[in-house]
Image 1 (cartoon, one colour):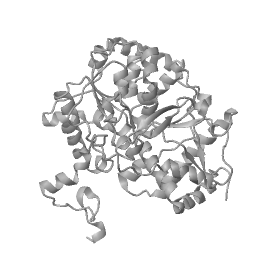
Image 2 (cartoon, one colour):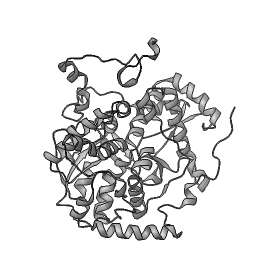
Image 3 (cartoon, helix red, strand yellow):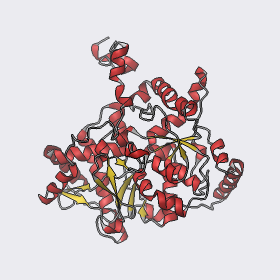
Image 4 (tube, helix red, strand yellow):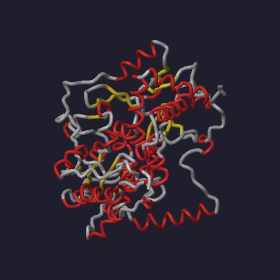
Length: 446
């Protein structure tokens, strides 16, 4: 067998070989999964440059166009880890959906859009969007920065021009990113683009062929905004205007996604009213606003175990990690009624892998749902039609019942609804005519 065809660890090829690390070396090599990124542990005196300052300079020099957050976006200003201001638009939003949410956790995006409908938020949920391709990059390593940057710019160009077909000017709708992986990837790519003239030149050639330039320039958003940040700034309005369920007896633990607050950590939102401002605010702030009991636990900082590549090739490591470091701790230590997350991969990992614990006499189970799903339940959203808990592998019945909602009645109502759907009586969360991009927003380039 040749060197190129030999099998290494998990069949990855000869270049993947056991490192034979000692226990002490292995602990040091994996310590990052328990890294503490907060105001207590980060040296805030050693502040890096704010990449946005360089972005404005590039725009002045005519290099790029910045998709600005304008007054009609009704932005709220929050602070990041270093105390920098970040604008979070709350209106005129362009939904950058998540492949993993739409495929595995459909109640995640529907809960978010349900809230926007209830609050009268103007948004566009069109079809002209691609995956961010970061899953491929992290999971296989065959992607590259040029391809990631081209996809980033292609999607955000579409967000910039999407209002034209509805009679608005460029920039009317501002992108709201659903997925934590996309969010972290896009923030990294934005930094690379602003810092590297070579990268900008390479992707301009690609985007020119796709017709995805504006006046010969690439479009970069003023802020990269995650849906959980929108929920964070809207939490008090949601609790005061929409909440119908008393949450004071619900014990909630929170898992914050690594791709949200450990990746490009300077952009993560912190709030002095949430956990003393020492941990990222998103997710936790919503549970607090709803009046739930937020329970701390010793492995709060740990990764969920997803890890991209090893969930494909070393799946038992992922399952072992999520069971031992997250699910078991949440159940035994926090006695949690539910764990909420803010990212597709985290929720999928912890939700879909609890069953494997039974094979090792680890019979621990905790409902794993998104912060926006829990909030929707608290505000009267249908557990099946909107929150879509039937898609979850972790048991949610006890949580729903403890919230004073009849699981059996909700299930019966949903079954009756499905009969109506079979007869052609379909309800839409969003006008399907608006979702379809009927006009071509590109010009053919050479």
